[in-house]
Amino acid sequence: MDTLNYSPDGLAGGASALRGGRSLYQNHTARVAELIEAKKGTWDGINAESVARMRLQNRFQTGLDIARYTAGIMRQDMAAYDADPTTYTQSLGAWHGFVAQQQMIAVKKHFGTTKRRYIYLSGWMVAALRSEFGPLPDQSMHEKTSVPALIQEIYTFLKQADARELGNLFREIDAARAAGDRARETELLNRVENYESHVVPIIADIDAGFGNAEATYLLAKKMIEAGACALQIENQVSDEKQCGHQDGKVTVPHEDFVAKIRAIRYAFLELGVDDGVIVTRTDSLGAGLTKQIAVSHAPGDLGDQYNGFLDCEEITADNARNGDVIINRDGKLMRPKRLPSNLFQFRPGTGADRCVLDGITSLRNGADLLWIETEKPHVEQIAGMMDRIRAEFPTAKLAYNNSPSFNWTLNFRQQVFDAWEANGKDVSAYDRPKLMSVDYDATPLAAEADERIRTFQADAAKRSGIFHHLITLPTYHTEALAADNLSREYFGDQGMLGYVLNVQRQEIRQGVACVRHQNMAGSDIGDDHKEYFAGEAALKAGGAHNTMNQFG
Image 1 (cartoon, rainbow, N blue to C red):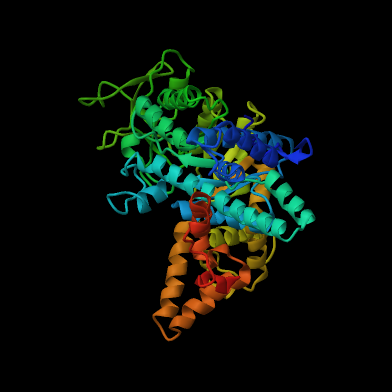
Image 2: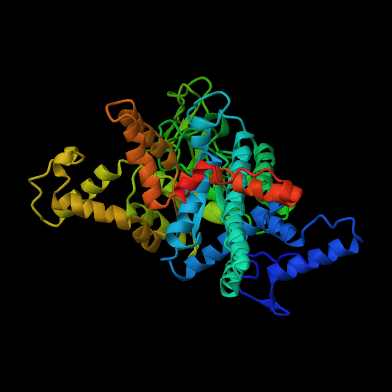
């Protein structure tokens, strides 16, 4: 029996190919009918088209199916970006399957396609929102299993979005048939034939690997089995890991990090996800400490380069201390500066150089995308490092964190202020440290800053090699803002109008599908199944008295 041939572009790779004048969907139904007929009456209660519909609504049988499918999408998108940097990709962080589902439903509604839009899974949000310990800082203290569990949850919701949307199409097909409208039926069958899934790539945060290379490998396998096609790992130490935008970050020597990159690649290859994507993140720009001195066998080797950034002082018989750690640098005995925490300190001002070395080393050892964690969103700062990396790897590409930890308004207003001042423009009307003030909102400087924010992603994709723009924590903040606004209105003088005016009425006017929340939660899918299983005896929820009918 033929199976439905799925691809990123639809059932038939974007083509409406017919077999014997029938669509693949219709042909598949016919094949199931043949199977039923072969059972000589024992399966007569099974409807062939219903089977075809259920299979189409559940096209991904395992997380590995998803990982292989979405890895192919990412590889296609990366090749497209190499040819044309305007085709960069984007994602928003999601901390629950429902949040990811609503993002992709909205994307399809507004843009007609999910192409080049992904989901980002943030370790920060897992720690803050999904740990059984309760809210935690981003220090790899949450359970390892909470990350693959969230990946699986997100894909469960994205698959349900497919089932819901296809179910609506199937009902429309049935209605067109009942009305004898063959043209409408053909149109709807073509939409089913070329259906685009809500299932998109997830770039998933594995933090620093939650342990050694073996621990990284084991967790990577769980994440891939849940559906992740892209894993992002950072070069911090696992037991001292900090949020990328906090102080106290500690990096590891390159050989330690390379072992974890290889561990992830082995995990992808073992599971048959040959196109799996590895994103290597360097925190070196803001990390001034290392826990280890790298092993070096010869001057200029990778360990020697890493140690070359250490802040050292020459040691003599007079200044030697008990317990000193000593390295040989250029024939001199040097003592690296060691803190009471037993961490070693890098020389100030070496962060950018270390990021460049980190990026080149990662690409030499199997990384597909780089991530440079910066302290501000500045196109030329990012480009300055990427230009040096691209001198060795011309197609080097970044995933970049458009972080809510940046004060975007203040940063870009100050960038405009500095540019104007450098060009001799009068900036006496502006107080640079106070540019966040609402008093400047209507000024030309604020307008130019907002335009730079609007075009930041496109500008950085073209100039700085950023293939993927993501916001790590957006839905953490949108949920907090929405809860604040609703609470103010509903518990205040507006009462019920606070909900109706600012939530429900907006859902209706903007065509937000969740206004029919029973349908979104799967009530109609359940009704379909009841009818498949029990026929006319089915007790369905979607009758005339269902209040969801008030919303059309």
